Amino acid sequence: MEKRKLGSAGPEVPVICLGGNVYGWTVPEAEAFRQLDVALDVGLNFVDTADVYSRWVPGNKGGDSETIIGKWFAKTGKRKDVILATKVGMEMGEGKEGLKAAYIHQAVEDSLQRLHTDYIDVYQAHRDDSEPAMEETLGAFDELVKQGKVRYIGASNYSGARLAEALETSRTHGFASYVSLQPHYNLVERQVYESDLLPVVEKYHVGVIPYFSLAAGFLTGKYRSQRDTEKAARGSMVQKYLNDWGFGVVAALNEVANAHGSTPACVALAWLLAQPGITAPIASATNEKQLADLAEAAKLKLSAESIQKLGDASAR
Image 1 (tube, rainbow, N blue to C red):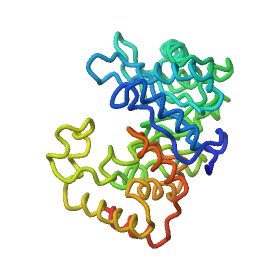
Image 2: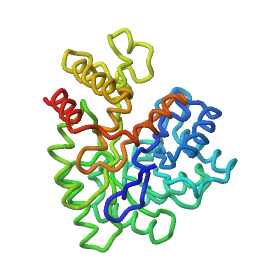
Image 3: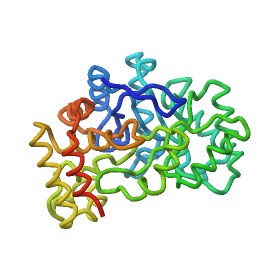
């Protein structure tokens, strides 16, 4: 599978990142084990998760996805075959949240224990936290890198201005620097990334691994009406796209997919891979067919005409 550098200073990774947010949510442990086995077989060895996944599920406390991945590592011995990304900062109960140094050091130990590993390849700030000074947060991440517990650091859900501030702070103090950004970006969520974040990632050569690459499933064409969303795990996330414009984007995806002998999901990911700054879109799968689509998307090269068609249909 094709690989790209995660920023100018990060590791080389496959061009599709497997989302682990579904483990312990819509994908139970045994199925997650099978999925990870197949993923490695087809070259999808870049896996993204977070400590908070999937705390929102009744009965879960957070750490569920990391725990499942850790059990798989323990069972298979394949930790060194995976480029593992996880995150810190979201609320985990009992005041456990944010990016203060003490909490980062506590949270990484918890994640390492759940993951049955002694290092994390890419440790990401899940969201910006303005309460501690930037120097405190980045200093804590820098200590983890120096200790060998973390290889690289990344940011998620930062504004362009705060990302630039973080990168300059690392330069000034000689701290480890964010090599990646994880923003919300896809065919129906373009404005923030393209206007606010793209100039920063291009200036500083930061890799981009967008989440919700398939707009919570909307871009696959599975949602055609309000009724389709009512029993779906992510149904509430796609309701804002159920309009003439959103359906127009899906129609364009179907046209391009037919022209390329592919699927709307593959095309939506291939479009992302053709955009400036993008290293590896994150997409999760709930069955082996969807996993095969992710592997196929890594090989799909869209024509300039197809890229233009999708860009025109999704422009706002």
